[in-house]
Length: 356
Image (tube, rainbow, N blue to C red; front, side, top):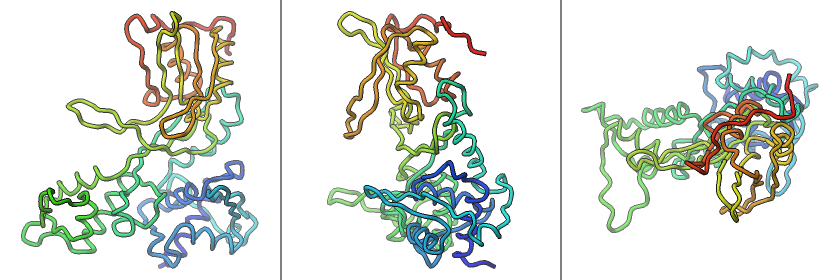
Protein backbone atom coordinates (compact mmCIF):
# COMPACT_ATOMS: atom_id res chain seq x y z
CA UNK A 1 0.00 0.00 0.00
CA UNK A 2 0.92 3.66 -0.14
CA UNK A 3 2.95 5.34 2.57
CA UNK A 4 1.35 7.99 4.81
CA UNK A 5 3.39 10.66 2.95
CA UNK A 6 1.87 9.50 -0.35
CA UNK A 7 -1.65 9.37 1.11
CA UNK A 8 -1.34 12.95 2.38
CA UNK A 9 -0.09 14.13 -1.01
CA UNK A 10 -3.00 12.35 -2.72
CA UNK A 11 -5.45 14.11 -0.38
CA UNK A 12 -3.91 17.47 -1.27
CA UNK A 13 -4.18 16.69 -4.98
CA UNK A 14 -7.81 15.61 -4.51
CA UNK A 15 -8.59 18.87 -2.70
CA UNK A 16 -6.89 20.92 -5.43
CA UNK A 17 -8.62 19.20 -8.32
CA UNK A 18 -12.07 18.43 -6.87
CA UNK A 19 -12.80 20.91 -4.09
CA UNK A 20 -10.94 24.21 -4.23
CA UNK A 21 -11.19 26.81 -6.99
CA UNK A 22 -8.60 29.55 -7.51
CA UNK A 23 -11.25 32.12 -6.60
CA UNK A 24 -11.43 30.54 -3.11
CA UNK A 25 -7.85 31.70 -2.46
CA UNK A 26 -6.18 32.93 -0.35
CA UNK A 27 -7.09 30.51 2.41
CA UNK A 28 -5.50 30.03 5.83
CA UNK A 29 -3.08 27.10 5.97
CA UNK A 30 -4.95 25.50 8.88
CA UNK A 31 -8.21 25.70 6.92
CA UNK A 32 -6.61 24.16 3.84
CA UNK A 33 -5.18 21.28 5.85
CA UNK A 34 -8.61 20.56 7.34
CA UNK A 35 -9.91 20.34 3.75
CA UNK A 36 -7.01 18.04 2.84
CA UNK A 37 -7.96 15.63 5.64
CA UNK A 38 -11.61 15.63 4.60
CA UNK A 39 -10.71 15.06 0.95
CA UNK A 40 -9.61 11.48 1.70
CA UNK A 41 -11.76 8.61 0.48
CA UNK A 42 -14.65 7.79 2.77
CA UNK A 43 -13.65 5.09 5.24
CA UNK A 44 -9.89 5.72 4.87
CA UNK A 45 -7.67 7.42 7.43
CA UNK A 46 -4.68 9.75 7.23
CA UNK A 47 -2.60 11.12 10.10
CA UNK A 48 0.16 13.67 9.58
CA UNK A 49 1.85 12.62 12.84
CA UNK A 50 2.36 9.14 11.33
CA UNK A 51 4.10 10.61 8.28
CA UNK A 52 7.66 11.86 7.90
CA UNK A 53 6.31 15.43 8.06
CA UNK A 54 4.90 15.07 11.63
CA UNK A 55 3.22 18.50 11.41
CA UNK A 56 0.79 20.10 8.97
CA UNK A 57 3.02 23.17 8.65
CA UNK A 58 5.99 21.00 7.63
CA UNK A 59 3.85 19.13 5.10
CA UNK A 60 2.65 22.35 3.45
CA UNK A 61 6.16 23.80 3.46
CA UNK A 62 7.40 20.67 1.65
CA UNK A 63 4.58 20.95 -0.88
CA UNK A 64 5.63 24.56 -1.51
CA UNK A 65 9.25 23.46 -1.99
CA UNK A 66 8.08 20.89 -4.54
CA UNK A 67 6.21 23.61 -6.42
CA UNK A 68 2.63 22.49 -5.76
CA UNK A 69 1.54 25.64 -3.96
CA UNK A 70 2.69 29.01 -2.66
CA UNK A 71 2.53 30.19 0.96
CA UNK A 72 2.61 33.70 2.43
CA UNK A 73 2.86 34.68 6.10
CA UNK A 74 1.65 38.03 7.42
CA UNK A 75 1.19 39.03 11.07
CA UNK A 76 1.87 35.46 12.12
CA UNK A 77 -0.88 33.98 9.90
CA UNK A 78 0.17 31.66 7.06
CA UNK A 79 -2.08 31.47 4.00
CA UNK A 80 -2.03 29.50 0.77
CA UNK A 81 -2.13 32.07 -2.02
CA UNK A 82 -1.72 29.94 -5.15
CA UNK A 83 -1.87 26.39 -6.50
CA UNK A 84 0.33 25.29 -9.40
CA UNK A 85 -2.30 23.50 -11.46
CA UNK A 86 0.26 22.96 -14.22
CA UNK A 87 2.47 20.84 -11.94
CA UNK A 88 2.98 17.28 -13.30
CA UNK A 89 1.53 15.72 -10.12
CA UNK A 90 -1.64 17.82 -10.39
CA UNK A 91 -2.05 17.23 -14.12
CA UNK A 92 -1.45 13.51 -13.73
CA UNK A 93 -3.82 12.97 -10.81
CA UNK A 94 -7.28 11.54 -11.53
CA UNK A 95 -9.71 12.67 -8.80
CA UNK A 96 -12.55 10.50 -7.56
CA UNK A 97 -16.06 12.00 -7.29
CA UNK A 98 -16.36 14.49 -4.42
CA UNK A 99 -19.30 12.60 -2.91
CA UNK A 100 -16.94 9.66 -2.28
CA UNK A 101 -14.76 11.74 0.04
CA UNK A 102 -14.97 11.75 3.82
CA UNK A 103 -15.78 15.44 3.70
CA UNK A 104 -18.34 15.37 0.89
CA UNK A 105 -19.91 18.50 2.33
CA UNK A 106 -16.98 20.50 0.94
CA UNK A 107 -18.58 20.33 -2.50
CA UNK A 108 -20.77 23.23 -1.42
CA UNK A 109 -17.71 25.49 -1.17
CA UNK A 110 -17.82 26.28 -4.88
CA UNK A 111 -21.36 27.62 -4.56
CA UNK A 112 -20.42 29.51 -1.38
CA UNK A 113 -17.58 31.23 -3.24
CA UNK A 114 -19.91 32.08 -6.13
CA UNK A 115 -22.43 33.52 -3.68
CA UNK A 116 -19.90 36.09 -2.54
CA UNK A 117 -20.01 37.74 -5.97
CA UNK A 118 -23.80 38.14 -5.89
CA UNK A 119 -25.51 41.18 -4.41
CA UNK A 120 -25.62 40.61 -0.66
CA UNK A 121 -29.37 41.17 -0.54
CA UNK A 122 -30.10 38.27 -2.92
CA UNK A 123 -30.72 34.81 -1.60
CA UNK A 124 -27.62 32.59 -1.80
CA UNK A 125 -27.11 28.93 -0.94
CA UNK A 126 -28.22 27.98 2.58
CA UNK A 127 -25.65 28.52 5.29
CA UNK A 128 -24.41 25.10 6.42
CA UNK A 129 -23.43 24.79 10.08
CA UNK A 130 -21.16 22.00 11.32
CA UNK A 131 -20.23 21.41 14.96
CA UNK A 132 -16.54 20.59 15.37
CA UNK A 133 -14.24 20.05 18.33
CA UNK A 134 -10.68 20.97 19.28
CA UNK A 135 -8.93 18.58 21.67
CA UNK A 136 -7.77 19.80 25.07
CA UNK A 137 -4.05 20.61 25.21
CA UNK A 138 -3.43 17.48 27.36
CA UNK A 139 -4.77 15.31 24.52
CA UNK A 140 -2.60 16.72 21.73
CA UNK A 141 0.38 14.64 20.77
CA UNK A 142 -1.04 11.66 22.66
CA UNK A 143 -4.65 10.91 21.72
CA UNK A 144 -4.60 13.38 18.80
CA UNK A 145 -1.94 14.63 16.37
CA UNK A 146 -0.01 17.56 17.83
CA UNK A 147 -1.75 20.37 15.96
CA UNK A 148 -3.11 23.20 18.11
CA UNK A 149 -5.23 24.63 15.27
CA UNK A 150 -6.95 21.44 14.07
CA UNK A 151 -10.65 20.80 14.67
CA UNK A 152 -12.46 17.49 14.16
CA UNK A 153 -15.95 16.05 13.90
CA UNK A 154 -17.20 14.15 16.96
CA UNK A 155 -16.91 10.95 14.91
CA UNK A 156 -13.23 11.64 14.28
CA UNK A 157 -12.65 12.47 17.97
CA UNK A 158 -14.21 9.19 19.07
CA UNK A 159 -12.09 7.33 16.55
CA UNK A 160 -8.88 8.86 17.96
CA UNK A 161 -9.91 7.78 21.48
CA UNK A 162 -10.80 4.24 20.37
CA UNK A 163 -7.52 3.86 18.47
CA UNK A 164 -5.53 4.97 21.53
CA UNK A 165 -7.40 2.56 23.82
CA UNK A 166 -6.83 -0.34 21.42
CA UNK A 167 -3.18 0.54 20.78
CA UNK A 168 -2.36 0.75 24.50
CA UNK A 169 -4.46 -2.30 25.44
CA UNK A 170 -6.51 -0.43 28.05
CA UNK A 171 -9.57 -2.71 27.98
CA UNK A 172 -9.81 -4.65 31.24
CA UNK A 173 -9.55 -8.34 30.18
CA UNK A 174 -11.65 -9.46 33.15
CA UNK A 175 -14.40 -6.90 32.51
CA UNK A 176 -14.47 -5.54 28.92
CA UNK A 177 -16.89 -2.73 29.86
CA UNK A 178 -14.13 -1.26 32.08
CA UNK A 179 -10.98 0.58 30.99
CA UNK A 180 -7.63 0.75 32.76
CA UNK A 181 -6.58 4.40 33.09
CA UNK A 182 -2.94 4.99 32.17
CA UNK A 183 -1.22 8.31 33.08
CA UNK A 184 -1.86 9.87 29.66
CA UNK A 185 -5.57 9.04 29.70
CA UNK A 186 -5.81 10.39 33.26
CA UNK A 187 -4.28 13.70 32.14
CA UNK A 188 -6.73 13.86 29.24
CA UNK A 189 -9.82 13.19 31.37
CA UNK A 190 -9.12 14.90 34.70
CA UNK A 191 -8.16 18.49 35.59
CA UNK A 192 -4.84 19.06 37.42
CA UNK A 193 -4.92 17.54 40.90
CA UNK A 194 -4.68 19.60 44.09
CA UNK A 195 -4.25 18.59 47.72
CA UNK A 196 -8.02 18.49 48.18
CA UNK A 197 -8.79 16.62 44.96
CA UNK A 198 -10.22 13.11 45.34
CA UNK A 199 -7.91 10.31 44.19
CA UNK A 200 -8.07 9.43 40.49
CA UNK A 201 -9.49 5.93 39.94
CA UNK A 202 -7.45 3.22 38.27
CA UNK A 203 -10.46 1.91 36.29
CA UNK A 204 -13.56 3.53 34.78
CA UNK A 205 -16.54 2.30 32.81
CA UNK A 206 -16.03 2.84 29.10
CA UNK A 207 -19.27 4.84 28.91
CA UNK A 208 -17.99 7.15 31.67
CA UNK A 209 -14.66 7.61 29.86
CA UNK A 210 -16.52 8.60 26.67
CA UNK A 211 -18.65 11.08 28.62
CA UNK A 212 -15.66 12.72 30.35
CA UNK A 213 -13.67 12.74 27.11
CA UNK A 214 -16.40 14.66 25.26
CA UNK A 215 -16.74 17.19 28.09
CA UNK A 216 -13.03 18.05 27.77
CA UNK A 217 -13.33 18.82 24.05
CA UNK A 218 -13.63 22.48 23.05
CA UNK A 219 -16.68 23.10 20.86
CA UNK A 220 -16.47 25.09 17.63
CA UNK A 221 -18.84 25.75 14.75
CA UNK A 222 -17.89 25.97 11.07
CA UNK A 223 -20.20 27.91 8.75
CA UNK A 224 -20.16 27.94 4.95
CA UNK A 225 -22.48 29.11 2.18
CA UNK A 226 -24.71 32.18 2.18
CA UNK A 227 -22.65 35.37 1.79
CA UNK A 228 -19.48 33.79 3.23
CA UNK A 229 -16.57 33.86 0.80
CA UNK A 230 -15.06 30.77 2.43
CA UNK A 231 -15.83 28.54 5.43
CA UNK A 232 -15.30 30.24 8.79
CA UNK A 233 -14.79 28.55 12.17
CA UNK A 234 -15.77 30.16 15.49
CA UNK A 235 -15.65 29.07 19.15
CA UNK A 236 -19.05 28.04 20.47
CA UNK A 237 -21.04 30.30 22.77
CA UNK A 238 -22.30 28.71 25.97
CA UNK A 239 -25.83 28.98 27.32
CA UNK A 240 -27.26 27.44 30.45
CA UNK A 241 -30.03 25.06 29.46
CA UNK A 242 -32.62 23.08 31.41
CA UNK A 243 -31.41 21.84 34.77
CA UNK A 244 -28.40 24.13 34.69
CA UNK A 245 -26.68 22.08 31.96
CA UNK A 246 -24.34 24.16 29.79
CA UNK A 247 -25.01 23.88 26.07
CA UNK A 248 -22.80 24.81 23.13
CA UNK A 249 -24.59 27.30 20.88
CA UNK A 250 -23.60 28.45 17.41
CA UNK A 251 -22.52 32.12 17.33
CA UNK A 252 -24.43 34.31 14.95
CA UNK A 253 -26.58 37.42 14.65
CA UNK A 254 -27.96 39.01 17.81
CA UNK A 255 -31.21 40.99 17.53
CA UNK A 256 -32.17 42.94 20.65
CA UNK A 257 -34.87 45.54 21.32
CA UNK A 258 -34.72 48.25 23.98
CA UNK A 259 -35.88 51.76 24.78
CA UNK A 260 -33.24 54.52 24.59
CA UNK A 261 -34.11 58.02 25.76
CA UNK A 262 -37.79 57.29 25.24
CA UNK A 263 -37.29 55.90 21.72
CA UNK A 264 -37.85 52.29 20.65
CA UNK A 265 -34.78 50.82 18.90
CA UNK A 266 -33.63 47.44 17.59
CA UNK A 267 -29.92 46.58 17.77
CA UNK A 268 -28.29 44.06 15.45
CA UNK A 269 -24.81 42.59 16.01
CA UNK A 270 -22.75 39.79 14.47
CA UNK A 271 -23.66 40.21 10.80
CA UNK A 272 -19.98 39.89 9.88
CA UNK A 273 -19.94 36.32 11.23
CA UNK A 274 -22.22 35.37 8.34
CA UNK A 275 -20.25 37.38 5.79
CA UNK A 276 -22.90 40.12 5.65
CA UNK A 277 -21.74 43.71 5.22
CA UNK A 278 -23.48 45.85 7.88
CA UNK A 279 -23.71 48.93 5.67
CA UNK A 280 -25.18 46.98 2.75
CA UNK A 281 -27.66 45.28 5.08
CA UNK A 282 -28.79 48.60 6.55
CA UNK A 283 -29.23 50.02 3.03
CA UNK A 284 -31.18 46.92 1.99
CA UNK A 285 -33.56 47.30 4.96
CA UNK A 286 -34.08 50.95 4.10
CA UNK A 287 -34.88 50.17 0.46
CA UNK A 288 -37.21 47.26 1.21
CA UNK A 289 -38.92 48.36 4.43
CA UNK A 290 -38.07 52.10 4.68
CA UNK A 291 -36.27 51.30 7.94
CA UNK A 292 -34.14 54.17 9.30
CA UNK A 293 -30.86 53.05 10.85
CA UNK A 294 -27.33 53.95 11.83
CA UNK A 295 -24.31 51.78 12.58
CA UNK A 296 -21.03 51.94 14.46
CA UNK A 297 -18.14 49.69 15.50
CA UNK A 298 -18.68 48.42 19.04
CA UNK A 299 -15.89 46.94 21.22
CA UNK A 300 -16.26 43.36 22.52
CA UNK A 301 -15.12 41.86 25.82
CA UNK A 302 -12.34 39.89 24.09
CA UNK A 303 -10.82 43.08 22.67
CA UNK A 304 -12.28 42.68 19.19
CA UNK A 305 -14.95 44.76 17.51
CA UNK A 306 -18.33 44.13 15.92
CA UNK A 307 -20.49 46.39 13.82
CA UNK A 308 -23.77 47.24 15.54
CA UNK A 309 -26.69 48.43 13.42
CA UNK A 310 -29.41 50.41 15.25
CA UNK A 311 -32.89 50.57 13.68
CA UNK A 312 -35.46 53.12 14.79
CA UNK A 313 -38.45 51.19 16.18
CA UNK A 314 -39.04 47.52 16.96
CA UNK A 315 -38.00 45.34 14.01
CA UNK A 316 -37.16 42.00 15.66
CA UNK A 317 -39.62 39.83 13.70
CA UNK A 318 -39.01 41.56 10.34
CA UNK A 319 -35.23 41.38 10.72
CA UNK A 320 -35.30 37.70 11.65
CA UNK A 321 -37.53 36.75 8.72
CA UNK A 322 -35.56 38.91 6.26
CA UNK A 323 -32.22 37.38 7.32
CA UNK A 324 -33.58 33.85 6.90
CA UNK A 325 -35.38 34.52 3.59
CA UNK A 326 -32.89 36.80 1.81
CA UNK A 327 -29.53 35.99 3.42
CA UNK A 328 -29.96 32.22 3.91
CA UNK A 329 -29.40 32.58 7.66
CA UNK A 330 -30.44 29.43 9.57
CA UNK A 331 -32.66 29.96 12.59
CA UNK A 332 -30.01 28.46 14.89
CA UNK A 333 -27.71 31.38 13.97
CA UNK A 334 -30.23 33.97 15.21
CA UNK A 335 -30.50 35.12 18.81
CA UNK A 336 -33.56 37.32 19.31
CA UNK A 337 -34.12 39.07 22.63
CA UNK A 338 -37.44 40.92 22.50
CA UNK A 339 -40.33 40.30 24.85
CA UNK A 340 -43.80 41.62 25.52
CA UNK A 341 -44.41 45.25 24.69
CA UNK A 342 -40.78 45.62 23.55
CA UNK A 343 -41.42 43.28 20.63
CA UNK A 344 -42.69 43.92 17.12
CA UNK A 345 -46.34 42.84 16.82
CA UNK A 346 -45.90 41.27 13.39
CA UNK A 347 -43.33 41.16 10.62
CA UNK A 348 -43.70 44.02 8.12
CA UNK A 349 -44.27 43.65 4.40
CA UNK A 350 -41.94 45.27 1.87
CA UNK A 351 -42.96 48.83 1.06
CA UNK A 352 -41.30 50.28 -2.01
CA UNK A 353 -39.48 47.35 -3.58
CA UNK A 354 -40.96 44.46 -5.50
CA UNK A 355 -38.69 41.46 -5.85
CA UNK A 356 -39.08 39.17 -8.80
